[in-house]
Length: 582
Ligand SMILES: [Zn+2]
Image 1: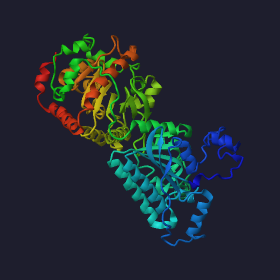
Image 2: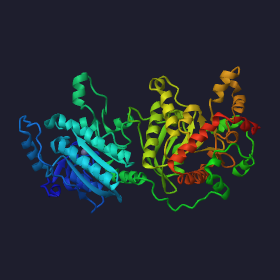
Image 3: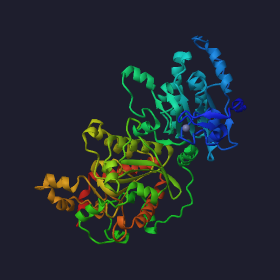
């Protein structure tokens, strides 16, 4: 590889962030991140590959293409002279280096852009090379990893370079159709036509710490608007806050993060890990017949084995479900699941803190977990909008559900919300349509979906995550079309009638089990979930495994058909269910 030819390196270099004079070798050992201020210096493609891929695994793809100067372009210098100069100074044939390799043992195809080569500009050759890397990924059935660094399209190739945005995007669409993961890693800077195509239309978008990404550059925007730009405009953290990237990653963590994501999203359905089935025989029988899972109310006595049979007043259960000490989704992600990697953003402008989601492992099996997040303190609750999702939250959930289906990952949802965010801004951004789209998508999502009502299951906001093959409910959770207070305000003289409303609404787990809305009640420790979170987590984990594993054997088309039947049933035949109520 010409690119690895040793170049005369200076002994010292000055940090662009803090102006410290740094010993070059020390800086390189630190992955070109300033030990003084954390500034991430730009990396050339060869150095980037060296840092990222497993030693000895790199196989470069051919990088020689026929010379092209389609426009006979001349500015101050003829285009061919600029190309020759770029080749001489970088040792590269073009502005991208493509290869196959393994990262953390996972085979991938890679395309790594090099900003030193004519500003990483996207010309016909760069577009062609990246497209070939994508096609290689398709042939090998491996994920595609793109590391972007570009000022945009290559002006010297005019509209032909613009077309490359479409060419590469088509190749990415083919990978998407094939259920193969695409990941882009934004590095500094990523702008223009690259930002507006394959840097952001991949499944996952990571931003390296310190990276800036945007369609228009800051100078252009300042000129056009005549205004100062907000602090941190277009930086990685800005992109995260505005829902544009899944995560911001320090360079030293990039390899580890990619490894975790590649492991979680390995194409197709990986062989089932050797997990002992823990469900009792009776449970097995119930699951052996998926039709039976759709059956109506079963003998209430069956519930006795499942938990404490103590009859608690519905209003007490409501207060229990809202207890600030009750484990949250992030608590369960820590206690029930392993290796959670959070994915952020709706890609439309926001990242809703009331919904968290990402890939995780459940007893060694990779799953997509999506849930409402509340908090234990007032500050946490406020920061999470009390678990009330905005339209952006629902769209983030939708994005992750679709991604899970494409990659063959089961979806586990954890529902704990007073309801969807009822604010003015939520209305302006299409709250109703956002919820509607989630419900529709879940009814036909071709992958197993398991929902658990862990705390409050508030109305449409809850259902937006709870159209599932199996719906579980923690013993002291509630699930209702309206809050007891809201119901009391409408149907009773005033809100003080909330306790009566709670009883009338039949919102407790045993009631909903009898109604067939919930398939299984997960018993809580004798007091309540918040008194023994560890035991609660243990029981939830067992219930998740017992319910999820059998679903993995059902073909997706069958899952969808059964799921539709499950929800179709609620339209009729409810009389018998009502008879089962006290
Ligand atoms: Zn520095």
